[in-house]
Image (tube, rainbow, N blue to C red):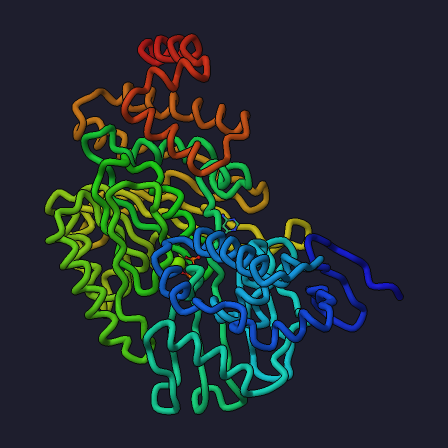
Length: 503
Ligand SMILES: Nc1ncnc2c1ncn2[C@@H]1O[C@H](COP(=O)(O)OP(=O)(O)OP(=O)(O)O)[C@@H](O)[C@H]1O
Ligand SMILES: [Mg+2]
């Protein structure tokens, strides 16, 4: 039986094979000429200043910038050497992977933005990938020798500046393109080294993307815009909860685009993932990236969050709260750093409060008064839709009764209908926002309404580019009227506001 082609793009073919329970992800190899093969054996020969270039690429913050710079440099260099080729792009990619980025044979996988994860289970085994559309696939790429896989691991550990050995067989690191890698070697991995790479999405999702792919309903997005921007007075404090790979970091990154650009934001993470390049005054901090020294990591996260308090932040954002830093984050909220946010590993809102109150976070119940919302995200797999991620619950903190944190669900996911809907409970946070900002509840509601209309226009006009999306949020923050008139929303908004004031 002919394998059925499920997808095909660039040099990638994804096929269904009768011999495999999961799809095969095939990277079609380039047929290099003999001269090209010779060149690829030692490309440094034609790159006299490659060490300077290695230093230089460290100065770029994003992988896109790094790769663009390298591509240009290699193109010029190959031309200087009089190398004429029909395989320019694959040749440049291979040199880039072998000499500069260290990715070797998994380079093509790291360049495919449709992949979420790359998994190497050892030698002479297919490398697995998790595809955004097709889920888990086996690839035609494998490491055929121990030395080739060890080379990759050595390079990762050198890049991270952390040793990996029999004594310290675990490593967490981030790669030059911003991806996050976890490595396990013997004796912890007795059958050979294992490498798991959570790929960094080159162009992060923004809130419009998340609305379009139905991860978040538009009315919730509008409400969160009001909460996070805080009407320029008092933004809300929010935690994003979910299981592993559910989309917490992605949602936090997208929501951060609502933060006014002039604010000073300090982010603290275990392994760098958040990318707030759209903010002007952002300082990312990374805790010690070592799994074995988790104890130290916890201390380190806490020390960094504590240090962040001394950096004159407007907000502190913590990528994965898991230790004593929880209390420091809440202290930050208490000293007026409103709009602080974080992610936490928990299945739902109740679970989040329990986790925060138990070892090792030990957060006292009274601290929960400082938190406004818990947003929960989940990942599902369905045969018809593939992998989907949804905001499944938004709970507000409604007080403490007899030491128990009271939660009110304001949005809930209905799995049968595949929609996240507003519940019947009134939103107390609207009242809180009204108290904090000195405008009426109705005005807060109108504000949510206006912003929903703007988001709808952005969806309708397919405004998806991150810069464009951020610019609209920033412009609205400074001058709402211009945005309203750009989208021709004056009349609609006026009549709604009139209607609201009569209710
Ligand atoms: N709403 C979404 N729709 C589609 N893909 C998504 C969505 N959110 C995240 N992803 C993708 O899922 C993967 C995991 O996302 P992310 O890193 O945000 O999850 P996480 O919950 O922070 O994971 P971890 O528990 O490992 O920290 C990434 O490849 C990301 O691009
Ligand atoms: Mg995460």
